[in-house]
Image (tube, rainbow, N blue to C red):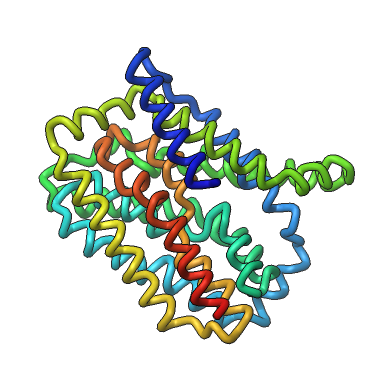
Amino acid sequence: MQLLMVVLGAVLGLTYGYNTDGFIFSSKICLFAGVTMIMPTLFNVKLTDVTLIFSNKMVLAKSLLVNYLLLPLLALGIGLATDNFGIAAGLFLLSVLSGGGMVMHWIKRSNGDTSIGFILLFINLLFVSLSLLMLHIFGLYTSEYFGESYADEINMSNFAQAVINLLIIIPFILSRIIMLIKPLQAFIEKTRSYISLMSIFVILFYLFGLQSSQLLFEIYDFEPELIYISVLAVLVFYILTLVIAGFIFNLSSAQEKAAYWHSVTRYITLALVLSTFSTTTFGVAMILPIMFAYIIQIPFAIYIDKKVRT
């Protein structure tokens, strides 16, 4: 169902933008994503659970090592090989955004430790500013390699504070308020899967209906090889991620299994939202690997789930 909503939202968004003037970007889409996709997951984050960090220091250390060092280095290597600034940036952004809206679903299905899963989810959300900083550094030091410019006045570091407010601070405060209204919290938790699906559809419809997203048609017309390069780059990234995570995490441990899922899945929708800030800097090709990550990650996660539970 999620894959269907992804394809439907993207196709209808592109169709709408192609036949109209398209949407003009507004940061309100970040607030919408924060309220509908991130806020409901924070109900299960209790401040007292922070103590779990101290009793699971090794799990946390492994997770940080994989998600903020090994996978970014992997994405950097693959990105440089693509010889395209936009594709490399999109892949790098994926590499520094761990987990995602479905990660808790997979942790539960595979009998992973959900408490650790929620703590890691919250930590990775807090680290969004670090992810943006890493993408900023990526742009600074690789633009010359690709023969592109990385404008000082339009770069990811300028958006960090807005992203933190809209995607972390406001959703967290709102979650604490709603938790005081038990019937409302119960309703949201009961319908969370439907809210998530509809929000994914709305976000994708809007983002692919943006005026800037219509440049994807120009890529299809004039540089169709970038589509195949993106698919191959993303596929290689996910396969090698699976190898790295399988080597580092002990899947017989419920705690490490939770960290494993936070490594083999990426927060794709968040990556797509954040990429809209920077297509003018990295190029619209940045959207390609993020778009194809949807098509690859969902069946990829289903396959991993079967392997982990056998």
